[in-house]
Amino acid sequence: MRIRGIPVDAYTLNILIEAFCLSNRVNCGFCVLGMFFKCGIDFNVVTFSSLIKGLCRENKIVEAIELFKKLVGEKVCQVDNFTYATLMKGLCKAGYTQTALDLLILMQMEGPQPNNIAYNIVIDSLCKDGMVDRALGLLHQMIERGVSPDIITYNSLVQGLCNFCRWKEVTKLMNQMVHHNVYPDVFTFNIMVNAFCKEGKLSETESVIQLMIQRNTYPNVITYNTLIDGYCLQRQMDNAQRALGQMVDKGIQPDLTSYNTLINGYCKRKAIDEAMHLFHEMPQKGLHPDVVTYTTMLQGLFLVGRCDTALNLFQDMQLSAHAPNFHTYCVLLTGLCVNGHIEEAMSLYSKFRGNGNGSHVFGSIIIDGLCKTGQLNIARGVLSNLIFKGQHINVYTYNAMINGLCQEGKTDAALDLFRRMGETDCLPNTVTYTIILQELVRVNKYHDANLLLDEMVGKGVYPNGRTLSLMNDLLAHRPGDSRVLELVQKIATNVVI
Image (tube, rainbow, N blue to C red; front, side):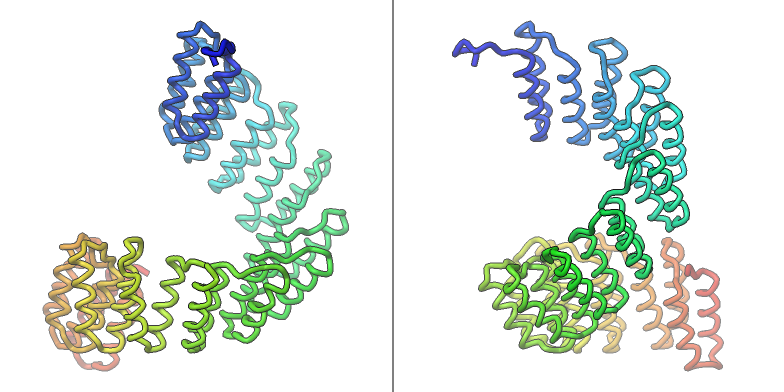
């Protein structure tokens, strides 16, 4: 621009700084700041507000605070509400709600006086952090100071109260907002619909939707999707289907979420034919199944043991250019293993185990399946291969392998693997110890079991109700064995429910 004789001013440089900050290149933004000095151009509050925003976006909160303090302390420029709001928003997103609140109090004391944007940022963050009473106190403060709350203010508070099922206070707040000439919008009602659905209060949900219509605030696709999900969670599939019909009657086009939610509901109830009907209906409605739809259908088909249909659907999925994701592969492997199709699972595993992202999870699923079908040697080979390749082995994988060894009576091998867990930086958990304890008692190694229990508690891994339940089962089978009773009593004194 300068070569072509086009003048560069503060407005131009501020645009450049903003662009760098929005693209998470705040350091480049500070380089542009140097051009202000080099070219003798006066910077302004917009310049530094953009830089503070950039620092917050890159989670450089300390640097953002230091820059703000410098602006105020050295009076580099007159900070305004926008500057404060920018820093407060960054603080809240990073989890520093109290610091943002302190900043708001500073504004109240020294100015500039906070506007509703500043209050909204802090109120919303307080509600998200579960500090609803403090947020309500802030609402009263802003009203007393002559700052008018808006719909954003009230929506944050309604969400906060709904999160804690404080329904009476929600009603009171709704009346208060109307008194202040702020009327609930579709977002307000959707918050309530979602909250009631999560609590299984479906009659109240229907009442909220009727209230929306009475107040000429019409439900949207999100409203009905939430209602459908609520009915599915309560296994009321007929009502969920009815809600879908209501959407259409109201002229609202169901979307992918509508169908995915219904299909998932039917699959969980093992109503695969109904789910498949919806699956085939989607293209007729102008919708195309996505990876979530396919994965849900696969899970449902495996749940009822229709493995061949599931594998055919998986092939269709690939042919329709829908790339399976991590969850899809997990569903495939788990479904095949649970239904006893270990060879097919192993064949699939060999094809995508090279995927670095999640290959250890795939290995865990295969190991669990192999152990449950007694194919311990193959399972041990898979585990050894994972360790050899430096893959992260989690505790669930070890637990599956150790449990499989114990089931086959290979106590020494199970103990050896248990002792070698630390070599891969994987620590035993309560389940691991419980499996070993049960096996030691089964083979009458009570002294070793007592030592292991001491080790377990010494490492801060405490028995839980499951541990005690397993030991009580053993006691029931050996009611006269004082050694088992002693061990059970020892576990009971350290149990964490």
